[in-house]
Image (tube, rainbow, N blue to C red; front, side, top):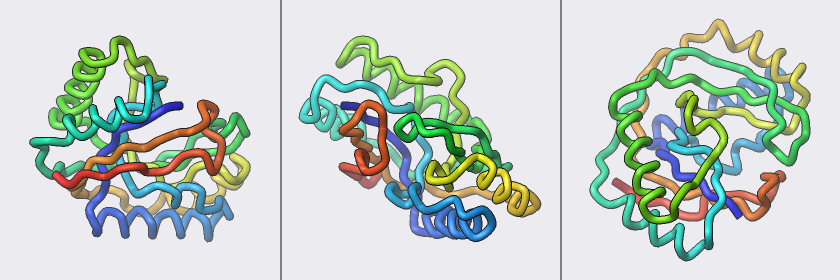
Length: 188
């Protein structure tokens, strides 16, 4: 069992991300697997948790005292991915410009997780690139590349607001489709 803690988009950012998801699907038939989750910026990739009640309690404490965050985005990216159950596919996301605010939130999350649970390693803890995923899995990488080739000419530079924090739950450590969802949301 795994979890992730994320910043969740406000209504305008959610609608923007969903529109890009639709455009990617129209261009490359990449599907809507990403629609399972709200538009978000992860503060940490999925990590093993000791138990659901313990992580929910931590999440409730961590969510207190935050204010909405404005995140600046700049470019569309596409990468090969096998994150969904190890099946080769793709991931399309809009890269966020690294900021002091995002760095601070991530460092504070890492510090508090370690304080509470000890080491909680996750992929990319040391080299994470903040982003908002708009398409994931469900199609071949070639289809993702086709969608990217169509959408890359769009202007992705914009500031979007994230006014909630979310707890994503993964019932299967392999993160197979259908085994994860947004369990809990807290408004700032």
